[in-house]
Image 1: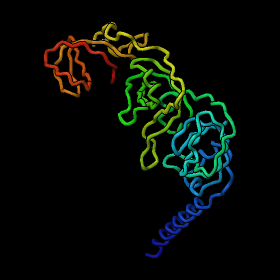
Image 2: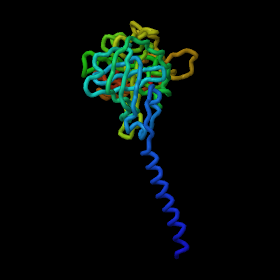
Image 3: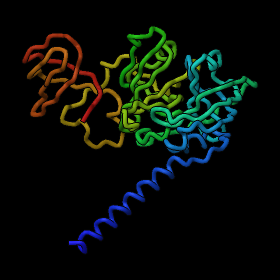
Image 4: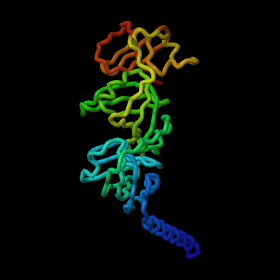
Length: 303
């Protein structure tokens, strides 16, 4: 009996020692002065928690009430304050910042102790990204550029000065927040190029859920291809041809189809049949449709 137990006891002791060693190593964090944004972003949760001292110099990309996004030559970083130390600064201001690190709720940030405007700086060139780049979470607080097709554009229901746009970016849909005067320029079905700061929605486990683009006030929004002025005059396409091969980019934009209604649910959508092929149409419109109605539909394709 004793011989069979000894290996088990040794193994358990080894695990306990390894566990204590791991915890001690995590708590024994070397404190050092951090002087650029990339150093802050590289910190682990444990390393950021003690509050490493930070001295940064960079240009403002986006300003909030008690927060800023600052960019230096290495990266962008989120700054947070509690006593309005960050109020009154504008995009392009060059700041000298003193503070300490904090793990944040998703990525490491800087809690600001003191900040001083030392002039005006140059906004860095943005990173040009596609949707797979956005999904990984690494672009938090980074200055980026995206291109895509506007799928939805509407005024905010909570803030009359804000606007919401959703754009199709290389296979994924990206929500964009921007000031109303800029958002009104982005019509549905237009091709656009946008620059802004990437943020993420995240869960309690600090995992990225979905990206979002914030356009600062005054940043130009570029329409590379305007939406059609009379969209219902577009060439009608057979339902059977949708998503089939074509050397042209036919299906990034809205398509026009027609058919006979076979079923409808008010406020959700309806189904149509065109020849031998059926198609589901998602729509929030409250227009009452009856089975047998002949309709023409304009919308974006979805698999």
